[in-house]
Length: 549
Image 1 (cartoon, helix red, strand yellow):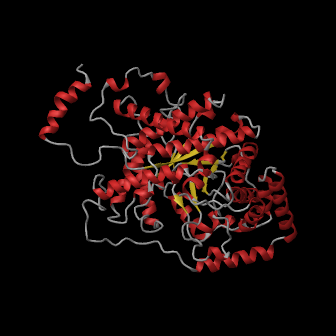
Image 2 (tube, rainbow, N blue to C red; image 1 turned 90 degrees about the vertical axis):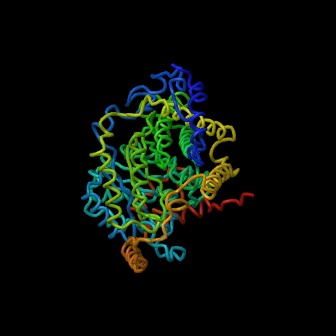
Image 3 (tube, helix red, strand yellow; image 1 turned 135 degrees about the horizontal axis):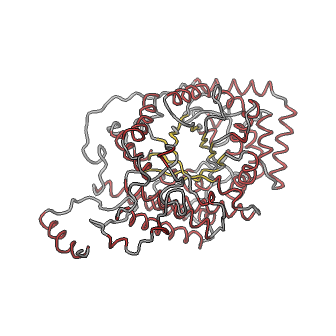
């Protein structure tokens, strides 16, 4: 076989003399510059057992389960939540009837920030970007008529994660469900809030302490529940590259592992219930390689660095969501194509669960029609495309294997740099993540503005003709409805039980004990979210991000 470099010199260069390369960015979104072609030279010395192996076996590059989609498709879990608990409950039931396999709950901004719907700071935001949940009363309505033992539930909540999870568990207890049969995920990833999304309440150290409380309490009490979903999604949406998303997400995961080990926990007692959540952007092969590299890095580090013995501790199980940041308000129907490509990349990358964005999400919360159409995109991939017939069908591709190795190496370079600076919390304090993501975001925007990187409908193939897209409107009456419900809850509950439960939570926080039993008791007493968070605000203080210069 003629060497690759000889072909490039003799044939490729002559071809491009006649027809020059197009003046666009021949680089991935992580600024990796692929060669024009890949051959066996690029994977010389490739060790199949070390780099690939088989699905369901270490290092899980090809997937965490032996039969993958031939036996069980990824969970189609559409993100939903808006307005009141009644409205979201109705949307949940319609999505389940349309073939969705699990629920994923979006909360409004006051809930995400730990405020009740009638708090002055909640004005104008109640029910806007998700469902309003202020007490167990809202949770009871939100999941009314849904069998919690039959449907797995994901909840995207972070700073108040312990309280919201406690409300869900309190609901299950009141309904007579067996906690041993409950399945689902609470996002509960506070480190990425300090890195990217900025929906934090308390300083980093006590915030992470609350997360580790769930690591310690969860496996014994709700053994099928994933008590954390370490999330790269919001890091990517903030402007990070695929490599940065992967590195910073895994670094967060390793930081939680180390904090749990510092508390004296056995790694195999908690690691099997750690899950992940990644973004899926437009660069098709880079996204596929990212998922494959993620599984390999996690497996290797958990076994070799942290001494995990249980193979379940080595498995990186992940949810994925198509890239909301890639959606455009211009020519919004183009987003259907973007989402389909991204979803296919997630499936070929071996995701275990998937949400597909609706085409109208650059304009507003999705309408019911748009959300259903997004679900149909997954179903077409699953049942019509043929990509589920064989596992990891791109394995052995010279380019995919080279790119997987490249992304793994670049991600590990970041991870080792973060370890040298003392870990993720130290990196947050030093503004490291802010600078890295800011630089990547700036570079991408420069490429778009210069025309080096084209976005259809934005800086290329523009169309002055606008199309009418139905918008999901949120009724401002929701604030009144929520305020009335809260007033009724406060009137009808047992004030002494609430007082005792909140004092128990306070003492657990002050003394450093596990807070989860006290969150559950407070939820059962119908203490509100704001009341629980105010107790911790008094104990831990409120974090204000320093100004970085």
